[in-house]
Length: 347
Image (cartoon, rainbow, N blue to C red; front, side, top):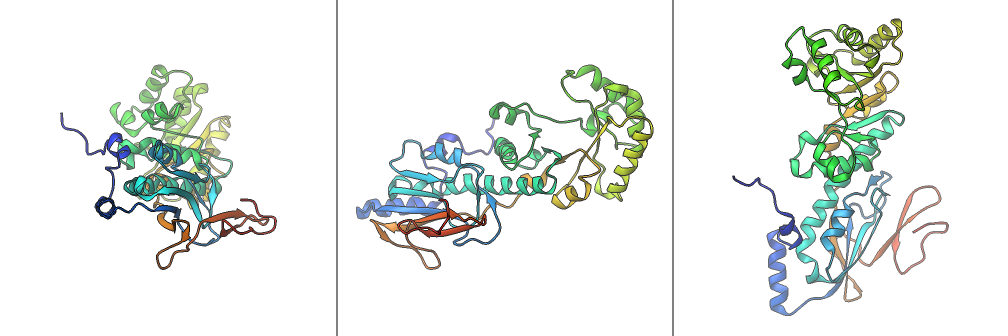
């Protein structure tokens, strides 16, 4: 059977997951007999911008550097940052030159997803948030998606294999495919079959928008499952959605009118922070997909800032080893590591 197009973990650990010019750099330096002791820093912005991002991917980075003849200092996984270095490497350049591509890949993508997850959490601080975005990425990095979502404040995720790797049970409801498999007009059969088949520890969340009006399907689900119904999920496609807030308020009204205040509302389908802010008072929880999994990577770069103890940098970059401080007002300050930081600043 043909293999998937996946670079193996062994290739990554051996430095093979690199750009060609790093291979040629190693070849050139070895031929010239040069292997300077350097300090290199990973940064996204040289100075604070006023916008915080979430640092993620450091556990994979630590595995990458295990056993290499270098010292690495970094922010904690999940720590907020705004400008300045997030990771520093000190050691002979040839010890880590081949690993720059993989290192930046680990950090950039995970940090982008964790940052977008945090923005979703800020938009709905008291809501249940589940990550539904693994279907948008290569399956080999599904656990990275789900872990990044957790770092950003999500309550859970849907991917089963990611749950096995991360030691957490996957969450979810039911797909339209299940309802459609029972045929149009037989939604209640699908809901009851789910209730009969699935372990009772799994919440009974009925998908209620497959064939009919959302309110109609919700009330039918309430009748079909009775007290077993925990929640209903509305995942109406955008072309049929209309005023989703009004739909949810109507659903809530009709449930309450029938004494089903206990049934909670769960919404999914192309949601971002603006949607969460709009709907957080009319729904209990949200399934968020592409906003996290399709996040733009943080634009990290790795730059040499010292060579054999002397400041060095390319044009447009800041030379010298640096330290980032958290200031009393909650901001960040970047300074040279051998100088005093700001008053009341914490490194």
